[in-house]
Image 1 (cartoon, rainbow, N blue to C red):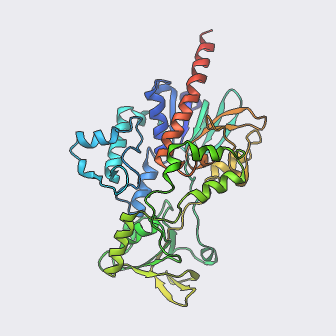
Image 2 (image 1 turned 90 degrees about the vertical axis):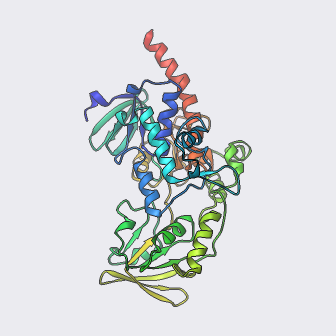
Image 3 (image 1 turned 60 degrees about the vertical axis):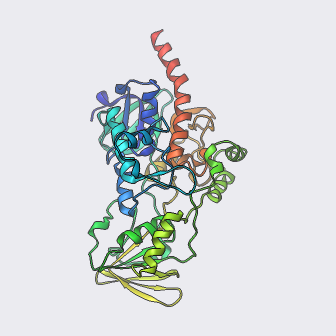
Length: 414
């Protein structure tokens, strides 16, 4: 990679759902030529998200078929009909049908091919970003890119949480996290005794996926299961009244962060996952230990855990499905917090403009960096990290860039 052949008008950092949707929206609106756009991701377009779906055993989405990476809300449904795959739109008890994981990714790949997004993908890892007024300098492990605009779509940046007892382990070899890039469910032995820690959708999907004949699976869930159809109230999906209440608090504030945190139904699972788990428990394919692990000790390649209720288990593998960390704790955001020209708020949250998602500078002017994904939840609410959040972020960012790009083109002509 050289600076000369990678400079761009807009550079998107992150090739997941948010990054791909932003690229599609900008190209669909004809705001840019393909040659003026770059997407930087070390794994490839949608590859990290595809890996996460496989790691937790997800087979169908929680959200309806209108939530995908194209701009036309009915694009995925039409794709399914055109390819004779209507049976992969799974009926829902509430709202529209939901797509299978395979249908979602096949549609996304078709869209990436349609817009030739592979041709603008750069295989690199971004290490730092600096807002220099007229240009954004993007440092990568393969060199620097200068871009007039930068769109951050990096998810949680590899930040996920382990329970406190895991920090006391002398060796963490038998213990891993479901979101660790190195975790491979297919590498678990067919006769292994496996523990899964967690009580939400990810833990339930993982436990039921791993529950194969000959393998013992124990689910450690300290609290009663909570069933919710979606990740938050549908009031937040309309980006109107609930969002207005959110925006009544100062940007980057503790009040906004707590309001979003309270609104998310974290640690829940939808009815179809709960039913699947119930069947596995009834058939004794999964054993439920409704207690909290207090001590874990590595012993000859296995891990022995003791629970608060006094029960103990010897496990070949122990997998934590205990959630993501703060979206502001990823390596890139930690670097950006040291960029003195950008404002940060409570717990390092970026201070964003509510209308454009542009990161505000210390002097109260908007930078040339815009944010999509979980790190934009103080503007977009609890669905910011979801596909519908990507679509809303795309609307705001494209609307903002349209006027700025037109102004820049007029200035260039003059």
